[in-house]
Image (cartoon, rainbow, N blue to C red; front, side):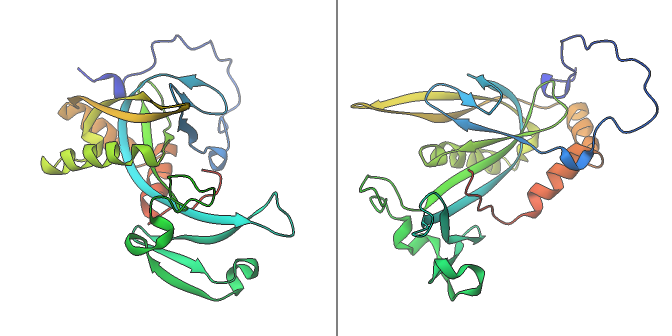
Length: 235
């Protein structure tokens, strides 16, 4: 039996008329929808859901630090962004952009990566570190991206470590994503919870492997895993 992660949607699709034989949509316009971890739900521009089930295809780090542009306060000047998962390209003159002087900094020792380095004087870090999960939801043809905030880094690391300990690929594991609401004083936030449900059957794993060889899902997956790191201010 093929698990839900690879099963068609239970919703009956509407009858489609016989159009001329052309592509249904421009493949280049297909991009993963982003869901952010809020206090009690995953939220995108189109919907909010409390839980999701499916498979995590890949996980990528994201780090980014910027300051307001003095000339245009509504804009941000990129100060540092990842060059690989452990190093950032630091701009000594952010206003000069890519033409200005730069240096490579090790994220582990960078002062911007220390707790309580946030510019607003809070307990957080100045550097916006996140994890981006390329996630294929049950019953869907294309993946989404789940943006895990700094408060969820430990949850992601724990899941990855457990998978590695058993020498499993992420895509072999059928999981449920949920959110644990946390509160301290008047402050509330959500923490991503990754629950392992089962391992995909051999048939399901082969089906997923075949789907990752060609088509829109394959293109999104290969583009995603080819990137060493992501530095996207919109995240």
